[in-house]
Image 1 (tube, rainbow, N blue to C red):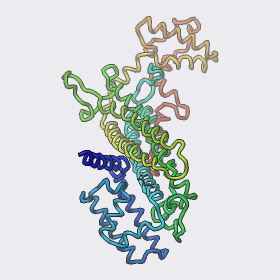
Image 2: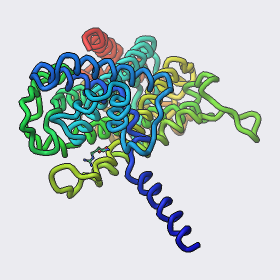
Image 3: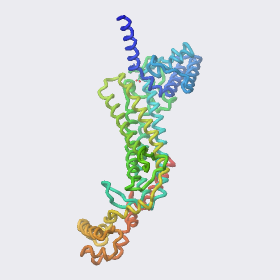
Image 4: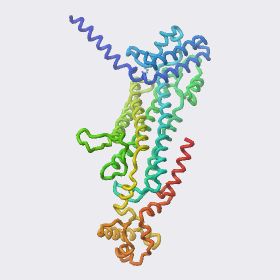
Length: 463
Ligand code: ARG
């Protein structure tokens, strides 16, 4: 009996070890890149006379059949094969026999996984860029419709100066454009092929790394085999780029949550994107933007996690690096769905122009314009103008009015220095005028906003 128990324990241990060691249950995500890489490798081996034409054809057709089997759900992913690379190779050999066993000539799983993962990351750098572009174009559409819609601009979440809502949308368009450029520059910086680096030191076989690099769409082979099999900077970069972009997603999400609250009522999210409460029948909850905000946490986690895995690893390949994938897959999926949903939310939100404009009449948004007027028209030092303006604000408060609603007499009586102030001050305190007065480059005036939109429209055509 004790013997039998030992046997069970051994089997269990073996199974636990397989589960612990294997990556196939998640790296199967890389099947397409693995097959693409293997086809390129086999073509190169053939060109170099290492595989015969017949062998190469058998391998290529076999690999395409494996791909079909995976895509039609017929492929059996078994822990016994450890990872997707072993699983594909062993199924290939089942299908084509001898030639399958020759495929791994002059490569190691170390350069194979580095190549496959890099191809995956490069594909995602491209597709996320497309999604960002779509999102930016939606911000531009909304901006175009609201270049004269007033909204209170805030600092410290306190009313500060009047903006137009289009301008506010453009602020986000700028953030997501920088994100786009980050994915683009990561793509360019990492567009080098590790394939042919072999285990860590290159190979004695007469391979042509330039050929595989070209076939796979890279610029050229990586320069140092040892670095190539242990480098995961490309994975860290996409995790950082996703984190930054999700930080931007969470900022607009936060504003949407605020704006759709009873206190603001600046926007109403389309019913599809608001959920009801299970207990309070009157409620419409912003679950969708809350989740967009919340999901930012996990992508930061994935970034820190890989940084921690990579820290202190001796050269060259170490199995620790197998931990690089799940976080990247998770972050990629998270940003893909988040950008898709955010794009729809922005596209379908209903902007409550009246509420935005009414809110501008709270908080004396044009107070700075009075100070600027005194500086510009009366050559007053700014600090003096600042204190005089404070008196006008107090006056408005005592009359229960906004500064933009004061009559000329009311302004003149607020402070001695203002008793002869010219009557055009009333116009300067007008909110729309205040917004349009900020006509410096990059400012909020409708003229500047329209200019900024034009620049974006040009960029969208070229990007
Ligand atoms: N499954 C491994 C990974 O994802 C690749 C295999 C390299 N393993 C090895 N023992 N050399 O990193």
